Length: 187
Image 1 (tube, helix red, strand yellow):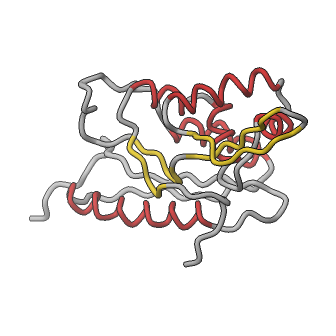
Image 2 (spheres, rainbow, N blue to C red; image 1 turned 180 degrees about the horizontal axis):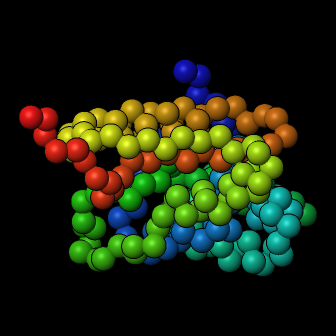
């Protein structure tokens, strides 16, 4: 597959290893900023225009993401004696690893991509434009892990797609244990 945007070098994946990183990525405006930077590097001014928020507000959120290692300055240019910074993501995909934090901190429990997806998808549902499936299967934990690896590849493919068209689509994917009933063993 051809490696498409963004227009700067970045890692494929980054584990969020501190509670501060998880909290930083959990804010809706910061998530939007990270999503925009999948397209290309951008200045605070460009990001503020895109999200229709004050430059000072966006600068604050960019600073939080930068302090937590999720963004970095990828290039600069001089504009009337002022150095303008272009920010980029440090990785295509951020994830919370299953193993405990190396610092021993307890990670926030409110980091739920499905909650964000449910909120974002409400309008699409009302307009009849929400495509989705939910399935349940009784499988081993090893099989669930293998399936997750395949889903992560699909997420990576989605992240690398060229940015085009007029509409930004959300893509939510996951696997989780449930308390659904199971049939007893066959006699």
